[in-house]
Length: 636
Image 1: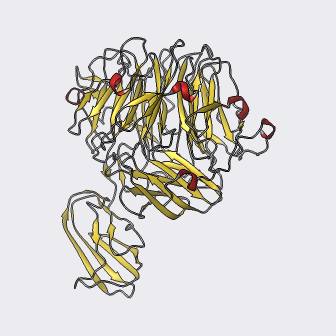
Image 2: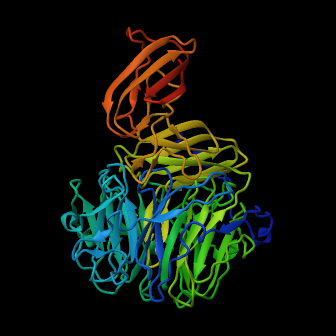
Image 3: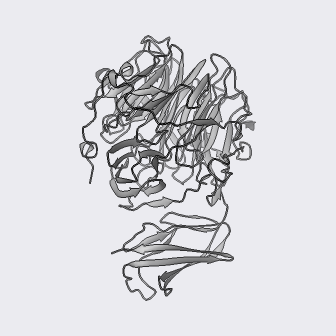
């Protein structure tokens, strides 16, 4: 098992001199602005407030939805409707379902669309481990406080803020993160205070729908005053999430909080070399050089004492970092940097970079695969100005990362934009992780992918850092593979400490990995733009799905979905047509039967209890006018 970093990631990469800056020709990738076409173009920017967004599949229909906050059009939830057919012929549409989803604050029945109700940032998270994404909104002003909406599983939400123990009055909380700080399998929430007085808020999940405030000082989680962003990442490769806190107080240093693994954190920013003082907005941990450890990008405003607006720290592998910004070709723009995020937009196996600015064009940087980056200017079609938050997200399920940028209130007129990636011939792989002993969102899980010459590392994180909502919504995890047709090995290290390895996984597919499944995984049938069998919390149509694991020995699970209640029987046949087993599940309600707890189960025996031999078996489900047959392989 590849549990050692140096085994899966051979030490073969070093930063190269600036003489190699243009030694690699960037892939020819272009983006198309589809903001108006998808139904997001009629939103008016707020001249005094940023408009950011958070992404998540709240209705479990297989595509990501969008929640927008802080705009003069109010806070809005947009459901990804997945309409369309061919890849380039149609564009996925988004529908505003804010009020129908019940997203309002019940104290005074104030509609969430009301712009007077402040909320600095938002997070999707499954705090109750029930399989659907709930919504947390951090309050910027005393009018609203922090709000927690529970997902009812039917496309609607319920405000449980008071019952859950959310603070009724908050003043100046900008950054927020969901993470399991004590590793008890339940997601906690940490919000950072952006004003110079008071302490941060840490909500400890009690597992009964309630949260208990813990003393952040005793836990070592009280970051620098004036904190604006919270950046999660296991920088020291010890198996737990550390945190980097950025501060807009130019007299105080940013804080690198090392997770000690016992519910406590230690500020090691000085010895790590990242204790910079500046008007720093946010950052991101990422493996920019594919060497198996997380580097750190910080973006700032030029009024900062340190001067730079974007800083790239390379992880030295010994607990320290080195500033390599100018060596790698990142431009030192003398305007406020409002957002930054990373993603492999050309699927070549190397993470690229997007930086947004106030009153300046958005910059897209291509990773040259040699330790340097090339600025793409506007040639790629990303031409937005005065942008805020930024996210790489595959909104149309076509296997490449699209780009979303929010609105900034500073420096002139701007608006949020969604850019569709026009694609390349490179291959890809997407992973959906489901925790069982760990939190269900698998926040804190670390994934390594070895594919021929590529050695890739990503972590499952979800945070909304800073006033502009710079997002890390890595659901699913997206890996570019270049022209490599399979991943030789995928190693998943779960927050529980369990390590699982999967071998010879084919490219160009999305797979679901459930913690504790051994070496098996489920292939998710991703049909671009809305052909999945569920939408908005309701089933579109009855469907028999592929069994998992497949091949199997000796047992397997057969998932399915029902659009209405029905008697369910599944017949299992040899390739000759001879029936060997009938699974009688009785009357089942409309819903999804995908997990091992709900799916049909076959132990590899016939109706007489005899063990079946290796071979190809067919399983069939007939309900009313619906009939479907799929193939399963028993391999001993």
